[in-house]
Length: 432
Image: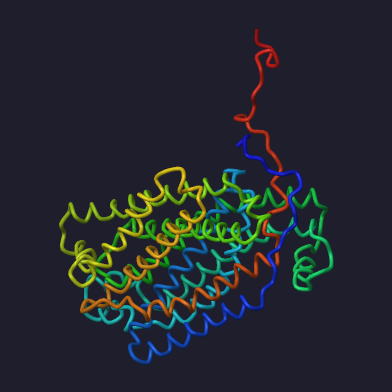
C-alpha cells in the first residue's frame, strides 16, 4: 500500500444538480410503471416474474457496492480512496428498494407453486415450517430492514466527518444535510477517529448479515419456486454475483465521471481504473467457479430431483438464453479483460462492464422464469421496460447522493501502525 499516493489536501467536490437528469430518471420510472401495469393486465404471472427478477438484480447490485465499501474498510484499502464514495452512493437507493419490495409481499399462488402443493405434496409439507406466507413476510421484512439499516449506518459514518470540512452556506439541500449530520459534533479529529473505529467494527457484522439476508431472499423468491429442488450454494451464487455487479457498476460510474469531469479524471487515475478492472476480471472467474461448482455436482449425481432445475434451463425452450448467459458472464469478459491494457482503457472497460451487467440481469430472470414457465420463454421487450421501474430510481439516487455529499471522500481513515509496514535497517534495529 505504500506506493498508493493519497493527496494531503483532497478537494471538496460535488456533482452539479441537474433538473434535466431528474426529469429523465422520472420519465424512465413512469414508462416502467405504465409498462408494468399494461403487462399485468395482459399476463399477470409474467408481470410478477419480471418485477421480482428486476428487484433481485438491482437490490443485489446496490448491496454489492456496499459490500465493496465494507470489504475495503476491513482491509484498510488505500487504492480506492478516490472512488470509495462512488460505491457508497448506492446506499441512497436502498430505502427506495425496500419500498419497491413491498408489492412482492403480496405474491401468492400464481408465483409460489408451493402454496397449492402444500395440500397434497408430502415433500413440500415437510417444509411447512419454513414455507408459509406469514413467516416468509416476517423474515424478509426483518432481514431487509436489518441489512439496509447496517448499510445506511456505514454510509452515515463514512459521510459524517466530511461535513466538518464542507463550507457552510451555498446549496440549501446540502446545508440541511450538513446540519443534520453534524449534531453532537466532537471536533474534526475526534469525528474521524470515531467514524473509522465504528466502521471497522460494523463492517464485519455487515458482511455476515449480507450473506445471510441475501441468501434468504433468493431462497424465498427464486429457489423455492421449484420446492423439490435445493442447492446449498445457491445463496452464495446470488450474493457473490451481487458483489460482482456492485464492483462492475462502480467501475462504470467511475468511467462516466472521468469522461465528463476533467478534475475527477485526474484524481480517479489509472491506478483506480486498473484495480477496478482487476476485480471485475477476477469475479468473472469466481462467478464461473460457483456456477460450475453447482452444476458439476448435479451432473455427476444424475438424480432426477436435482436435474430438474438444470433441465428446465438447458432444454430447447430456455437453452439459448442459458448459453447467452455463459457467454456474457464468462467467455466475453474473460477474453476481453485478460490483459492489462483493457483494464486501463475506460472505453474498453466500460464496454465489457455493460456486457457483464446485462448478463447478470439475464441471470436473475433465468433464476425465476424457467421454474414457472415451461411452455415458452418470456424474456423480451416487456421485461426490459419493467427494468425502468428500478433503473430510473437507481440512477436518480446515485446522482442525488453525489450531488449532496462530496464525490471524493475528503477525510481519510487515520494511519495505523502495522507490523508489515515496519521497514528498518539492521543498524536501526541494533543488529550487527
